[in-house]
View 1 (cartoon, helix red, strand yellow):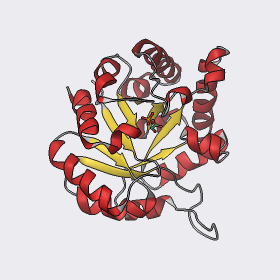
View 2 (cartoon, protein in one colour):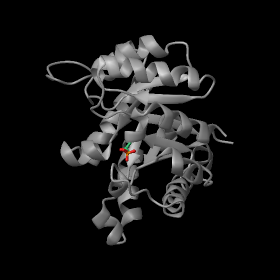
View 3 (cartoon, helix red, strand yellow):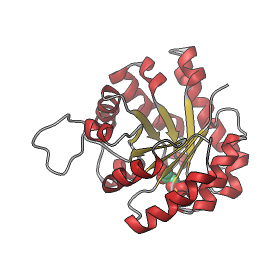
Length: 248
Ligand code: 13P
């Protein structure tokens, strides 16, 4: 049985004061439940101090594909390791669409993360227009193929994939459990065509307007192994309920 994993993606939200309250609320409530929070870079030290020794891991939302050097404003994988990160999100749709990250750049970031011992959470997912045009599987396949071509299918044994349909992110429009399951099954079968063992162990999260009220029906699907949670990860009671739904 695969473990389910819920990770919060705080995006560009929070402050020292707000984070302290949120972390203090989720930590005792999630005792013994494996979960993660991906926080803005400046708050990694705060997350590390608050969560060390707990069952909640922490990570970042982006990293540089470079290891070091004259890359003003960038943050390397080694720097994330310095702050005890376990996870780093790569290829989030906001990075792809707002910051022009290509499939090839995402693959380089994925490899940089793994080379430093981090577990990348690789985001894939289609735009609304792509779903309506019937090319969801082609888009997701292209995004996955870029990483598999660069890093090999075996690398997915040290990664998490998050299926996040772009039209469901921050819109309140969740994919139905059936819609999400279909794409998750497609992703798993695609990986299985290359490596059955890696496919069986691959954690595939769903992301896009997951809330306490819809988490259980999503997580019960056979190929949905937890979630990547945006807005609801900023509300302690919501995030705790979502993590508990995955732990059932
Ligand atoms: P929401 O949960 O706010 O829709 O965001 C999903 C997401 O983008 C997580 O990475």
